[in-house]
Amino acid sequence: MKAALDGGLEAAIGRLGEGGTLALGALLLGIAFGAFAQRSRFCLRAAVIEFSRRQSGGRLTVWLFAFATAVGVTQALAWVGWLDASTARQIAARGSLSGAAVGGLLFGMGMILARGCSSRLLVLAAQGNLRAAVAGLVFAVSAQAALTGALSPPRLGISEWWTIDGGGARDLIARTGIGHGGALLFALVWLVAAIVWARRQRVPHRAWLGGLGVGLCVAGGWAFTYAISRIAFDPHPIQSFSFTGPSAEVLTRVLFASDGPLTFDVGLIPGVFIGAFLAAASAREWRLEGFHGGPGMPRYLVGALCMGFGGMLAGGCAVGAGLSGAAVFTATAWVTLVAIWLAAAVTDRLVDGRTPTSALGASTTLGLVEP
Image (cartoon, rainbow, N blue to C red; front, side, top):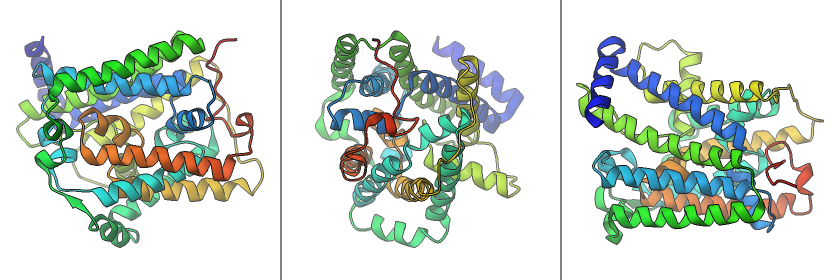
């Protein structure tokens, strides 16, 4: 099977080129991710709110399905020799623990204020939510500003507070000695927990499948880019889903003409948007929504700004760190994930603690638990 897949990729590269094949693969994976995320209402913000408020709505279960599947399938691929993520930037390059912590705190705070993480905003925008579209645009602008613009100096300064060497120092599997088998067992424990909670809460099977599909797409991103890196002539990074860097790159390519080669990131963002749009349209859930009064708009904009800067500082977003980075057990991704959870829970308690869940907006209206 592996030989057949490599042969198919070689044929695609012969027709589309390496960049075109990467972009097309990301587009297809993104379409699947967008559809699964839209139908399952996948959202880390809603999962954190549900957990911190001790509610039963199904969102935490969906996130756990996605998390366990992303980690488990990725580690299973590594165990059988179909994936080696040791050269991925999240592991091989020098990282920043201070950036991961501070960036994760800012991102977690921002996703509560913006009522959705970066991936959820993109899915909601594809459903016709203009609030999410505006917040997503601000998110992309602030991410680009943190990468090369006015916000770059503070990002670099914070990143230098506490750094960590690349290689074994960032690889938690190597540092703990659990091996890919131990990492796979860890994922299976959480998958079993997700199944138990889903049954107890009577979460519909479409939510199960949606969470599993999101996780499979993340693992598929790692497997696909690794396969390309093995057979391509030019070096290409091994990566999977993330929304901070790709959003900034797509924004730059839209605003400025670029003769740069196509990349995985270029196909990812349009793919997720298309997939979510098709899923919403087929379910008759597409409708235009705007801001309800002026006071709510600053909240969205401040939240998007915090997410863009925080995601670029941390080197990953709720998906980039929370699923993709966690799936390959990079230390900085786990620091970011923990920081996102903590900041989101605290911010929800301080800002929305007395607000009924039904009034928190579209991204928290669950509708997953069967009556």
